[in-house]
View 1 (cartoon, rainbow, N blue to C red):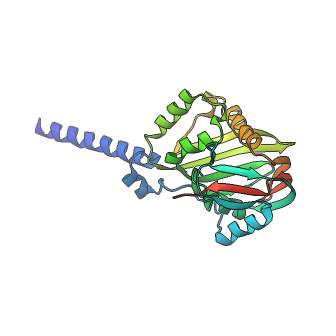
View 2: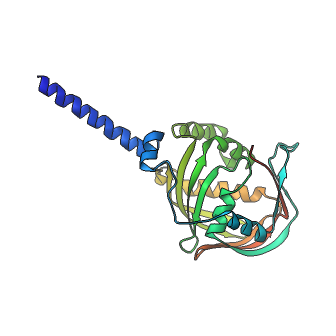
View 3: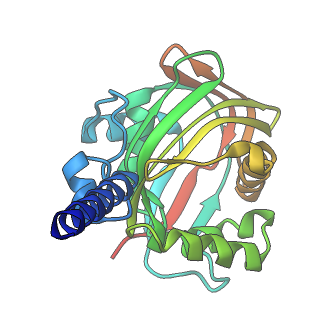
Length: 245
């Protein structure tokens, strides 16, 4: 009887260990996640530096200035003017532009983006979940009800404040209209079942609302491929942003 009890306890411990290791890998237990490296974003092999950020800014056409406080209309981003722009940007430059953004509600850090094929985008990064509410508020709710926003933010609480994300999609932009066909999405190391909801339409609607919200932006043509993003259209001449604390 004693031997049976010992075997039973060992089995329970093994099951517990497996559960902890699996959940840790998926991102639920920060200590175990760090052991596996699953608390870090997937490495897409895109290397960049501050110089890539400067290079992007110099050719992007829009001057970025600091906004001392939220404007009277409650916005943390302001756009002024309009000018023509035809330019191409490398994966390193676009990755640096996102990662080095000083806007208070930019939800991504440690960001990498690839353009591996025609109109294909693949990105990974750390999602700062504590910035999501401000981000969603700034972009206007992206046609999602407040109840659904609250439900989504509550779901993300099971992850750490800085959660790795990964996505792959086909993206087409023509005449200021965007179409996104999602292929893969992961939060932590958990694959999100895209077939269980209309992910492509949700992301398309969200991206379209963001584009429509920017005065002076007219994306006549945006193409992705061969390791670069090419843009033709108009952009604001100045972007004022509320900076991080």
